[in-house]
Length: 314
Image 1 (cartoon, rainbow, N blue to C red):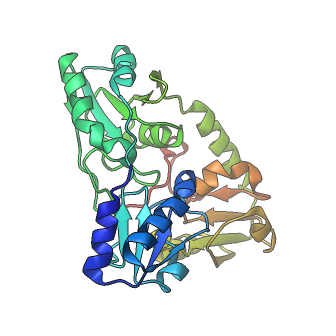
Image 2 (cartoon, rainbow, N blue to C red):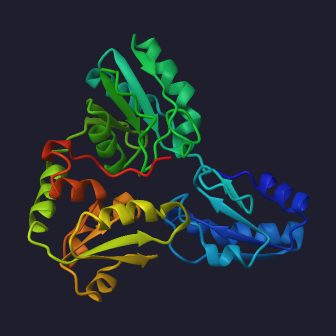
């Protein structure tokens, strides 16, 4: 659900004559309806971004230059740009069944984390855990994290480590696996839509990543990828990684694809862009694509058992 009144208020307060709307893939279908409502009530020009959007870090900068204000839907505030207004989206779903299913899998002291879509249910989750005799722990993350207990796909700093178990409320595998590897404590993932809970197993993904590292062992020529999206630019890190290889070049890319990687005559890549790219899209790439952490393992700067997901932190 969105607060359309907040959007109208911002437009009037700023006396904007044009606005951009940016949605993640799952919310794009709502774009035309919202655009028409804004135009009807304000009379301004509204442009919807049709490009893919993968997170709060992924701002359509070209559209931003065309409009007076950009409304970025579905994510909490990340970038410090007053031209971008983040409109959060909350799922109105009952978390009772999910928490109930998780209880037998939890220890006494429980760290609680979730995504922004469920952050408004945090008080209810805490209440349910306390009623069950648990000791819930909520931790504030770094400055990229808007709320205590919130996690991003690239940042798990709000995940407590001094607990028996961490409870993740949400969907999918990437967040809970990243939390498990980062915090080094058991993680229980509870899906509020299905009401099911499970202990997170990272063995499969670990084997897959070890295999990618091993495949890159014989690489001579390296491409170090620099992300060009607002919240993913890590030039300093890319330069440091380049210094670890005898033969490496820096390559800037906005959208990574197999075709783009094939264009360069290199044996393997290190990606400093969104940490999910190297992992989620591994099967599509023609050559190994490592995260910075994995590259450090390959170069002997980390132990194999120290493998964790790459994070973008402040």
